Image 1 (cartoon, one colour):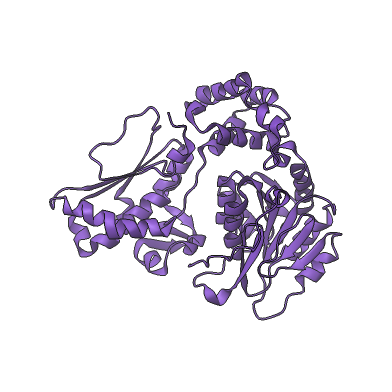
Image 2 (tube, rainbow, N blue to C red):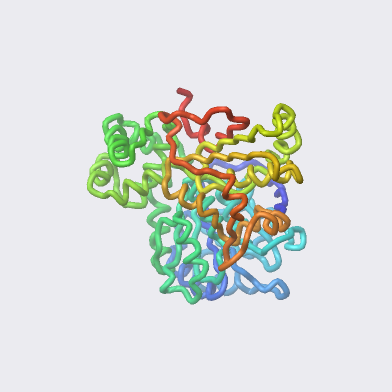
Length: 440
């Protein structure tokens, strides 16, 4: 699917807009009741903005904004192109449109300007994650299918918060269950309970400090002893030393876990970690920051095929293998993207050229996903129909990388800060790693 570059609003964000916590709410079949319950349980002065992305009939005018207005004292509007998002207001996607968020403004484009599956929740959530980072909240309510699951992954990877309606309380549990299956969901609750949790999150010092310059919140975790104790637990239980990871990012991720566990200070959190191995696992996974998707930054892959692959090929004899390494490969999408790009470049020569693709990570969970090579149907957003037909098989609402491609790729556990690297390599991709490490 080709996404349209949004127009930027005409004026810069104010400090208040920049600090705004924006909640994206995705729903489909059975979603009206769930959204109504959620909004009804919210106060009018939560300080947050709410953007509802509901699957709508493209051929009829929508009265959703009017219906939801009856459930809340907040102002609820149908979104318009360029409309700024303001606190204590709700916004509803119009029918037959895609909606994204850029610089605090909603951007609308007709469905006719895109090709591929209609996944408006994923598209909005991804833009929400890119625009708001850790000031983004994603909520998935009742609906069939899996729209929103990839979007929640994006919000989670940027340090935002993700909540999902308990499937037992949803009229249609497809979307909630698909979201939960990603492993990126923070809380699973009934719709009304989600509202109460949103209010707590929105008023928490961690959230209030994200863009307010609150030095007190920043200094709470910079105290050496508390942070050192947290690092010690991680090092002892997971074998990873986070001392050389970017400190500001690590602090925000720890504060995020404290927020979710309702623990007010680092000392209590360090003590909590010592007695709760499940939380150590959750914190460890959060700190690893799994940011990936197929053909992320498509221009990068076009540059590789046009400029880099030809140069590598020109220096090889026919029997020499292509050896690529992706450090911090997460669930494998970048490794497989490189493999597909190389196979496309080689064309008919591919069957005669040895190819060795190495993907490494320190997350066992991510590596298991990478080896399986099975992904949600929503990857149609990122992978062209031609590539899906050539490199994937489809079944059960998922796509799996063909065995012929999987056999080119080796996935292994590795900590690049202490384990030896691979040798005799033609290309190393480390863009998912270096940006999170200190210069040392």
